[in-house]
Length: 137
Image (cartoon, rainbow, N blue to C red; front, side, top):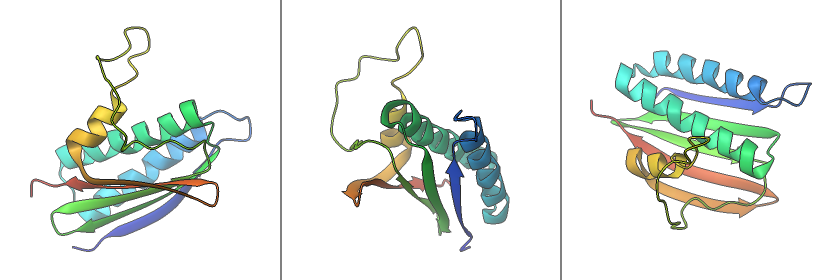
């Protein structure tokens, strides 16, 4: 199966992240259906995309992102490009658990746990993140 989807997500006209996150989720839902992903893979993909975008918004002040998803055999390749501040998620950081106030801090752990081939590059003022979500079937 070679389903693929490329989509852009941007902040809404009022500058809130709802449009970016909602638009991304709708595009992920369409990809999930076209790629024939099971419920577990669909949930993991949704969480990964939400975490990547939420972190780009919260920590990098991103306003726009481009996401490429493709099913390649028993994996989904994920490529995200955003205009936020530089941040390399491949660099090891100490993690002592989620922030008790916000629940934050688990996104990087999820990327490493559920994803493979995590790679980062910064070019022309944009972050480029790629990873692979392994599928069970």
